[in-house]
Image (cartoon, rainbow, N blue to C red; front, top):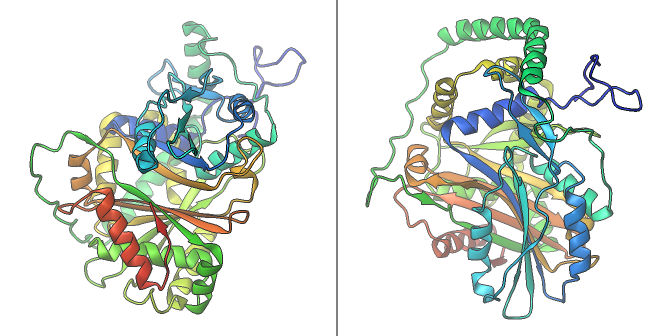
Length: 465
């Protein structure tokens, strides 16, 4: 985000222009859209230490997190059409250490519990760090942060900076530092300055509407499975399992199939989708959404990603990844070279009413292709596992939803997301799968069995927890 033009009150004590603390338009739209439908998304990393954990090192990491991009929260504009702003918030003052040890078999349940604890990007704290001693002598650490503070790569970068002791002065003001009158005047002036961009966005909307009138009608969305045992309004935690595979076995198999590490992860996602009935009507392909980072140096945006869309034939990926590799390479190239039309509409985010956000989300849920997400962080390096100055023995990352209802999952036709990364120190590939299939046995044991069976189809074995 570039610095805004300085106003009469827009200079720091040293005379330099204060950083622009307005949310990027895409960030505001992401936040407002999810708020409109009552959806909350968080990101989580879990580390497991088989050896003694140095709590002094962990406290340094906890302290440093509050002096980076985690050290902020959202303050809404008093105007219904105003731009929201970042204000500083160092986060929780203490690490949440469980009083009682739990068996290793309950690690996954504890991680689920941590993922559902509040991480509020508006009222704070937007993140929290928890520690669980396990009865076998190992120790688990969980970091959960609001997705409205950072995306996946930003989350990873903030962790690395905290581990290295790198802190930032983002120049954000304290919460509620503007009086209401001053905030109204400033935001009204800014809205007037943004009028030309809003006008261009309205022209883009009209153009897209004309183009859509000439498009063929989309295929009907899949019919949701009828709910059983209640009205579906109860909250559920979507089951998730972690797969740990030897990095050499993974790379050898990817090469043998004519693919790469990332292509093999995409193939595994496509095969899981096939087993969960998520093939597209007509050609039987699986639609993958492949997040691509657009984060640059000193980027303060929360959301700096786009997504490529690739159609993969799941029937061939276990024996030959060459076609999938070609399709994915072309999809990524097309995404990089083709402007995202939705970005043209970003200036309208502050003016979009709640009911419009809801209609937009309903349109996404009704996507007849029922796309699945395959997110690959690649080689995360060695520093990410050094929470206390020593390297952990086990780790995984994932995105989770809070207060998800069975009703919304059924209406969307289910959910499937895979996130993978490689760590050179441990010589492991870690994959986390979050999945829900309407009408199926949506439990962790059932998902573990499906994951192990799918791995076997690729000629791979691994630890599935």
